[in-house]
Length: 455
Image 1: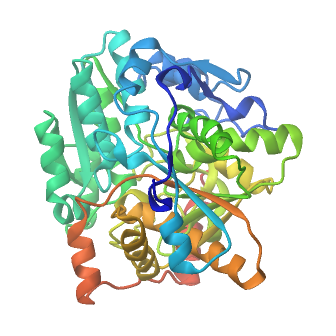
Image 2: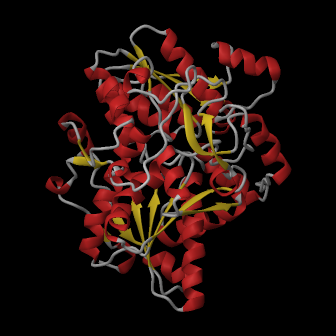
Image 3: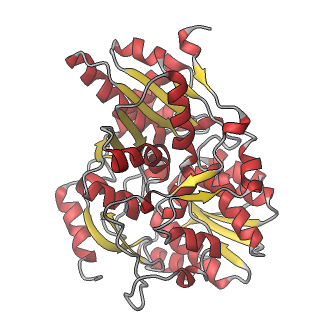
C-alpha cells in the first residue's frame, strides 16, 4: 500500500457505544440559556414544545460525562462508521512540510457529511416520543439532506427551510432532500409570519440561517405532533457529533501518534466540537498540551470579532437567549458558498471554552479557502465541501508554519463533507469570478449595538 493511501479504520465492535458530554468536565460550565419571556434559566420542560424531551434533557445536562447511544442509532451508524482516519501524505509532500497531517473523513457517510451523526439521533428520539413530523433549517443543504434521510429511516415527515441564496446556488442538494421525501422551501418565505415580516422589510432578502431557523421553529410549534430539529449550535447536537473524535482517538493510537493541533471549520460548532471535545477532555482533566483551532469565514467572524453576549439564535427571537459569541441575531452575512458557516453566533459550549482560553479561532477569506480546497483535491483526490475548505486552509497555515520552524508537529483536521454537489462554486473559483467579502468594523459594531439591550 502506498503512503498516499494509508487509512485507519476501526472494527465494528470498536465503534463507540456512548457520546461524550464535555459539559460535565468543564471547569467553568456554560451560563444557562434563558427563557426569552421570563429571562429565567431554562428548564428541560421549557424546551418540550420545540424539541423531543430526550434531546431537551441532553441539552441542559451538565453532570453526565457519558450518554449511551441508543442501539437503533448505533445500528444505523454501522452503515458508514467508523469513518477513515487518513494520513495526508500527498498534502504533506505538496507543502514540503515536516508536519504529519491527518484528516477524519466524514464525507463517506450516505449523505456526504458529518451531519448524519446527529440527524439519526434526533429523528430516533422524535420517533420514540410519537412525533410524526419534523422541521428544520439548512444553509448549504448538508444538514437538511441528513435530516431528510434520517426522517425517512425512522418513518417521519420532514419540512426543510433552506436559506434562499443556497436554495438557488445549490439546486442539486435541494433535489436530494426532495428525493428523500422532504418538503423544501426557500427562506425567507411567505409561508410563516416570520418570513412575511422579513420580506415586508426587505423584499430581496437572500436569507440567513437565523431567518430559516425562525421559520422552522414557527412551523414546529404551530403544527400538531411536530418537533423542531437543529444541525449545529446547540449542545445536544455537538454531543452526538463527538463520535467523530472518539473514533479519531482510537485511530490515532493505531497510527502511533497524538495530535499537537486539532482543527475544524466553524459555523455553529457541531463538527469542530465533534472532532475536538473528546481530545479536549484530556486537556481539561490531565493538562494535555494540544492546540484547538476553529476556522470560520472572514465574512462571518463571530469568534474572532463578535462579543460574548446573551442573544437569540434566530432573527425573529423565537429561540431561547443563548450566552455566546455573536455578531447579533440580525447580522446578514455575505453570500459566500460555505452556506453552512453563515451563522451569526457560536454554540454556548464553544463560546465558554474560547472565553476560558482552551481554544482559538481564525477567520479565513473565501478565496484562500478555495485555494486550499483545490490544492487538497489535487494532492489527496477528494474534492472538499466549501465549509471543509476552511479547516484545510487553517491546516495549511499551520503546516507551513512548521516548515518555517522545522517543527514536526502532528495536525488533525475534520473533513466534514465532500464538495461534489458544490461544483458550481468551484466553477466560479476556477473562472476567476469568485470574490472575497470583507466585513468592516463599523458594520460589526453597528449590528452589535442592536443587541445590547436584550439583557
